[in-house]
Image (tube, rainbow, N blue to C red):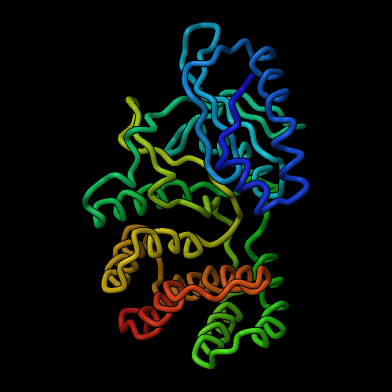
Length: 297
């Protein structure tokens, strides 16, 4: 019997409700099915994030790997598409995949060597920027979610959402973010985006110093990729340095990248409003710091 971590069960309950509970209930059978189908044996305790159960395994030929079991949705459906496109170049390598369930067999990286543990935040930001510069050099494969569609949907939601923000300054910031997105919505880009490259989604291994894991891929503009590294290990006084460093490494126009970074803030705020949560001060402060940044003028 596969042990299901309590944290994964709680996260699925919170974010996916009945569908999440059903996923957790069938996980033991799903794990047993793929352990048998792909001739794998367990090799350690289960790991998990918010959305997936990850089992360290050994393949029939003795190669270590991980079995990733997750709820199939619009985000996870694109993961194997992106990993196949990158083919291990800057990202974890996909070994095999089941399209019906979204189950994946991946190369095993060193989970004890996570970029989040690196003591130098500036160096970590530069690692992320370097990975993003490489990963977004790939054209997006057909069939992925498109940033242009997401941006247009956000702009449609914004007028109603603004009515649910009581604080005038916060309401003005969100409205300004939407205005910035309107200026770039007709230039959504066509690059292969990771969307969630923060320092807990970067691991080391023998074949490469650092590799990206767990993409939630989009087709779009690389400026939409900067938000996680601005918000992770948050430091208000460091926001402009991080933004400048990443835009330099990726070769992005700063005004354009700021507009798409505002798009990420708008996306997060719309989710908070939909779920009845207050807007995060961290998000609003990033918007303030970038708004007053002379390098973006």
